Image 1: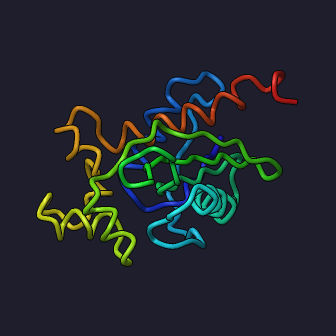
Image 2: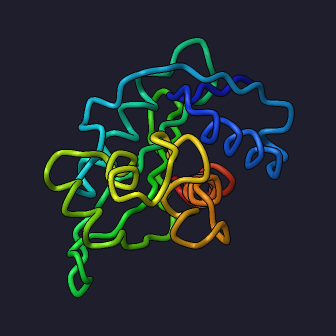
Length: 177
């Protein structure tokens, strides 16, 4: 079996490889990263945009494979939060016909980071500008969540959550007919 992942991000690829190892029906699958566009903003600012980005990455990487995967992090409006937004990771597995979606747990960015995102920066740039990191590409490392939780929860964990949630449908096909 071959699984294409619509990304060149090492953290996302490692998360896919580690997660599929927990599934007998994916045993021995070969994972290949393909750098494709999401068709959405670098920093999605709505759940709809984040889901669209994940689905676009999955569809755009579906070539000469059995399954493809798109993973997109983005903001979603959440009433009652300090900033009005929370971040989630969305995973879309694509089998050439159907999408199988999963989401990670959500968390809130600091208000000043959200202000910078609203003014056009992505979260990498916002955390860098705020002096929260010296790494301008934290999304390819431990992520903003790693900084906020002091490494108790890192970006790879977030991606794994969304992958596991999406795999529920593929692991229990008879329940999702």
